[in-house]
Image (cartoon, rainbow, N blue to C red; front, side):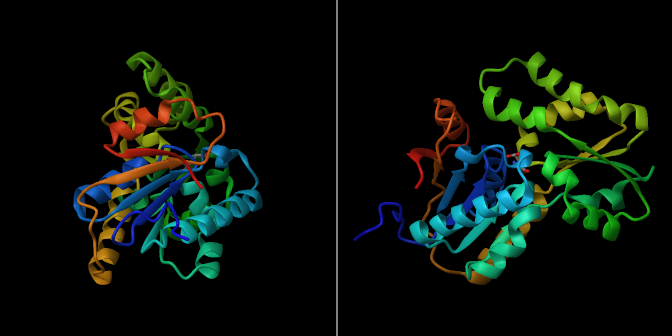
Amino acid sequence: MTDPFIRTADKPVVFIDSGVGGLHYLRWVRDNAPDESLVYIADTLNFPYGEKRASHVQTIVVSLVDQVVKSFDPKLIVVACNTASVVALGALRNLFSVPFVGVVPAVKPAATLSKSKLICVLGSSRTVEDAYTANLIAYFASECRVISVSGREIIDFVETRFPGSSEDERELAVRNTLSAIHEEGVDTLVLACTHFLYLEEEFRKVCGAAVTVIDSREGVGRQVCKFLRRDNSPAAGQGRGTCFQTGGAAMNGHYTLFAEMFDLDYLGVFP
Ligand code: DGL
């Protein structure tokens, strides 16, 4: 029987996240590797990952990847989610032979960039609490003081209210969470959740010119492109991509808007 999800002549690169965050990573890859077939899966049924226990997120992500591998036979899976990457990347690499690229907080570049040696890492609750992030900080930013902040309200805002929101609402969503930064005199802010990229401009505006705002997009994108060059397998995507979601309350029409925003074909529920 032919699997309905295998619809390209080549093996796709599949991006996964709990929601819409990873679409910015897909865009970076498409801009730089336009021939690849790209598939995006938003695990909306299990959103938000960041408010769940690490073991629960790991179970969810392993099961999602299992379905993805069976359905698409991908050449590469990009775990376009900091939360999923910090808790599950090790397990995924042990369990599956498909290659993975993960997205983890940009602590290393932040430590290099920061002059004041005061850094803020803003992520989901799970990401900022996780031992993986603590180890990243201990290893790459031992000379810095790092303030970790959970941006759970911003994640929820982006996933459920971003389309159609006003500039004021977007700015307020950022302002409410970032009040701590100004008090502490931080000079570098790490956007350690892929959802935050929708509000990049607002982050820069609210933080002001004295704070450098960084994320992991370019590093991850370059890693993906390096893999694709080495792999050199057929790519017949012609700049197109498809987008699925796994269900839940987010089946409300927003995803057709997000798909349009990123020039993707929205194909409904996966699997
Ligand atoms: N986009 C995800 C990340 O980068 C988190 C969103 C969630 O909590 O589900 O961490």
